[in-house]
Every structure is written in C-alpha cells, then in structure tokens.
Length: 364
Image (cartoon, rainbow, N blue to C red):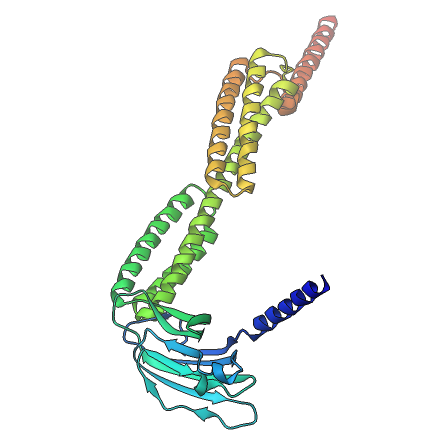
C-alpha cells in the first residue's frame, strides 16, 4: 500500500515538472506606426515588438523541437530580429523577407530568460478586406502550438468612407428635422442640439480628411448622433409627462372649486369628474415610472393616455361650471358689495335728511 502511495506521489511530482516545463512567451512591448486603429490601403506600416520567452526544451536530444513562427498580412514585408540579453550586446539576424518566417530553437536558445526584438515593415494591401493582420506569432513545440499572439488593424478605403459619410450625413439631417420638430412642441432640445453640433463638426472634418482619419471622425460623429437621439427621446418623454402633470393640476383646481367653494362633493356630476381624474392619475403615475426606467416610448404613451383622460374630465368640469354659474363669491366681489352697500346707505341717509327737511318746512 505504501509502495502504491509512493508511486502516486512520484507521478504527481513528474506531472508538476512537466507543467512547469511548458514554454511561455509574452509580448511586453508593441509599437505600430502609424498608431491609428484604422489604416488605409497602400499605407506603409512599421511594427515593433519585444517578446520575453523561455524555451521549454532542456535536453540535448530535444533540440530543435521548438520554433517561433511569424507571419503578416502586409504586402512586401521585411523582418529584422535580434536577441536581447541583459548585460551583453544584442545579437542581430540578417534582414529577412517574405510573409512567413521561422526561428528555430538553435537560433533562440541562449538559456534563461531572453528577449526577442522583432520589427516588421510592409504595406497595407489594396484588396477590399476590412482588416489586415499586422503580425501573428506562434510558439510551437513538436508541431503543436504552445502559445500565440495576434495584432490586427481595421482597413478602410476611400469608397467605404464615401458610403459611410453619406449615410451619417443623412442621419444628421434627419436628426436636425427631429430636433426642430420637438422644439416646436416645447421640448427642451438643448442637450440634443449640442450633440448635433459636435457630430456636424466631425462630419465636416471627415469630408476633407484621408480615409483613416475620416473613419475616426465618422465613428465619433456616429456616436454623437446616437446620443443625441437618445437625449431627444428622453426630453420628449419628459415634456409629455410634464404636460400631463399641468393638465392634472388645472383639473384639481376645478375639483377643489366644486367641493370647497360650491359644496358639491357629493354631486354625481362632480363624482364622475373625480373618477376620471383618478384614472388620469394612474396613467400619469405609470408614465413617471417608465420615465425613471428609461423606457421613453412607453412613458410618452402613458403620459398621453393620462392627459387625454384628464382633458376629458376638464371638459366636463368646464361644462358643469358654465351650467351652474359662478354663484356668490365674497372674495372676488367684495369691493362691489362694499360699494353697493355704501351707495344704499347714502341713499337711505339722503331720504331721511330730505324728509326731515321737508317736515321742518311744513312746520314752519
């Protein structure tokens, strides 16, 4: 039993050693010129990499079972490799040409931690592909890939830029029409207008820039247009909710008049108005909830339903008020009543004085 346990321990230790022996590499420095994320056909590219690596093979009979393979999608590429070790001069290789390059373990194994300096130069293909592979690095052992690294860049042509620019210019035009329409409805369009102005400026720059720069301007403008549309959608929903709130406030004033000023709280007509008001409030509450949840289309829909119901109740309230008249209102007619009272008192006093004077004349 102890012998079996010992064998298992030895086997586990061996597996640990195998795992530790697996080679690894890391790209610790990258520099690509031009440094734009977007390239254009025919553009010259110079890419520089520094790779830290450690060979897995250690035995003499395993030499040359490891390789580093390099490839690129650039046209007419040239490669410069050199070994870098701390405290010693760099070891350069002769410049190599071609899409694929291989470095053998014989070329790379200097023991310990070593760095490989790689520089590749080439031209972006003039094909219609939307992406180019600047470099691909594979570390192979016994023909199996132990690790790999890729760097790609997007490619845009003049034709692609022309089509993309035209599409975003049309979107910008539609956005402007939408902003003007909502402004006419009283919507606060300031935030959306600011995004529109930024997008307009970017598209103006894109129209006179090269493909790679233009692509960056168009991407920024596209984002600004999307943000403007979202801000306008929000502002529109806020306006509709605000309109519903204002209508409800007017309706509440009418109901207060009937209940407090005219003591009609139990009147069936007032009760019907109050019932419609409660329905309108429910829609309004749903509209606010959806507004807070950023569901702007549903917020507008519920706000519109609430306002329609509130307007219906308000129409009934106005009709009822015309029907019953204003009635007696001490506050609004106080001065009129005081004036009338003064006149009546003056008339009475005048009559009394007149009669007394007349009586004196008859006696006298």
